[in-house]
Amino acid sequence: MSKSFEENTKDFYDELNGECDPKRLLYIAEQGIFLKEPLFKYDKIKDHEYVVDISVISDQFFLINNNKQYNRLKYFFKEDRYIYDKYRHLTPSCNDYFSLVIINKYFIEKLLYEKDENFLNEVISTRENYLLEDFIKINENNIKDILRKILIESGKDINILNYCLDKVKRYNSKIKSIEGYRVPMHYCFETLKYYSDELCIKNHLYLKCEDKYAEEFINVCFTDEFIRNFYHFNIEFHEKFSKKYNIDFKEIGEKFEVIDINKINTNENYTNENYTNENYNNENETNENETNENETNENETNENETNENEYINDIQGQLIKIIDPQYKGKLSYIESYELNPGDINFDFINKYLRNYKNIDRILKDPNYILNIDIVINNYTDCLIIKLCYLASLIHNKYSKFIIQVLIFYDEYWHSISYRDDKIVFGNYSGGRYKYKFYIRKIFKILMNTPHKLFNSYFYC
Image (cartoon, rainbow, N blue to C red; front, side):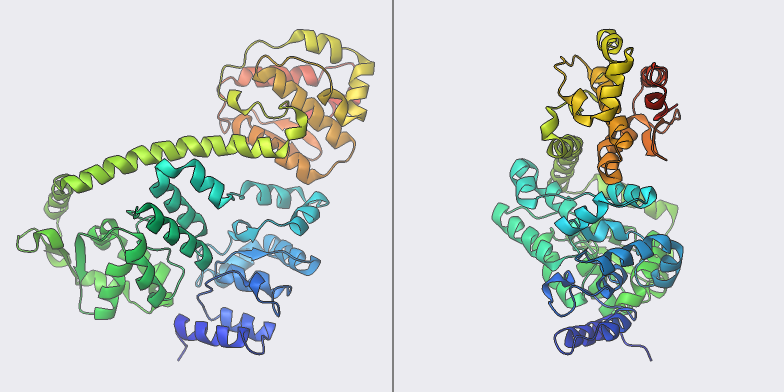
C-alpha cells in the first residue's frame, strides 16, 4: 500500500536533514510530498540538478545556481509534454515551471547568452515578481486584495505565508477568499488548519457528511463560495486533492448537507438528495439577502479589485522604467501605450531615415539614436526610435534576452515580436492597440529606407 503525502513528507524531511541523498529525495518526491519552502536554504542539496525536478514535482519555487541546474530547466522545457504526462497526477500545473524560478544574478547572466528564442520568450512571458514590502507600502489602502494576490501567486512558500499573516495581523484585515479557498492549498492538513482561520474571515456555511475527516477538511479549507457550490465542483476537487489528502470527494458529492450557521433553525438548508433548480434559485435568493456585513464586504471587494487592476497596469510601466533608466524614457513612454498615436513625425524621418549615412550610423551604433536630441511628442515618435534601436541591437548581435525583454510590451500591445532576427508586425486581432494602421504605416516606412540591410530587419 502506497504512503500518504503526509507520510512521504515526513520521510523526505528526515532524509533532507539527514544523509540528504539527492536520488533518494527525488524518489520520495515522486511519490508525492508537501514541500513547504524552497530548497536553497539546504546546503547539501541546493546546488544539485535534482532541485529542479523536486521543486517542479512539488510546485515550489527554486533558484538556478549553476549550469547543471540551468540545463535541467532547459530539459524540462524541451520535454514539456513528457514531464506533464509523468507528473500531472501529483501537480496539475507541473508544466508551469518557469513561474517557479526565482530570478537571481546567475540566471540573468545565463539568459544574456541564451540563443533559444522560444526558451527566452517563455521565461520572459511568465515572470511576475514583486518586491513585497514596496508592493504593500504602495497599496496600504488596498491591503486585502494585494495580500490575496500575493498568496495566490506565492503562497506555496511558508515564508511568504508567514509574511502575509503578519500583515493581516498588523492591518487587522482578514481576507475573504483565496480563489475559493481559505488558505493556499500547498501544505499538509495540520498547516492548513492553523492558517485558515488566521488569514480568512469565518464561513457562514458548514458542510456535513459521513466522513468526519473530510467534513473538517472541507470546512477548514473551502470558503462559503465553494461549500455552496460543492455539488458542482466535487469532481474538480477530487482530481486536485483526492490523492494529496486521501479524500473521496466523488463519494461525498453523493450525500452531503450544507447548513447556514446564521440560519440554523430555519428550513433553508439543503442536501444533495433534493438538489433541484428550485434549490439553486433559492440559494441565489439567499445570497442576495445575506447580512448587511456581507454586502459591505462584497462592495469593498469590488472596489478593491478595480484598484488592483489599475495598479497591475501601472506595474507594467514600473518594470519598463526599471529596465531602461539610461535611455531617458525613449524606450518607455508607457503612459501613452493606450492613447491616440498622434501624427507621425516626418521631420525626424526625413532627417534620419531618408539619409543612408544616418541610417548606417543608427545601425552600427545602438547608442547613437538614443543620444540624438529629439523632442518626443507622442507614442508614435517613441515607437519609431525604439524599433530603430532594436534593429541596431540585432545587427550588432546583442543578447537575445535583452531584445526579448525590451520588445515584450510591444508584443503585448501591438503584436510586434522578435523572430528569426527580425522585428515582425503580426497584423492580427491579438494586439490591444486599436490604431493598427499607424503601426503598419511605421513598418512600411522602416522597410523602405535607402538602406537595404536596415530594411531587412523589419517584416510586416
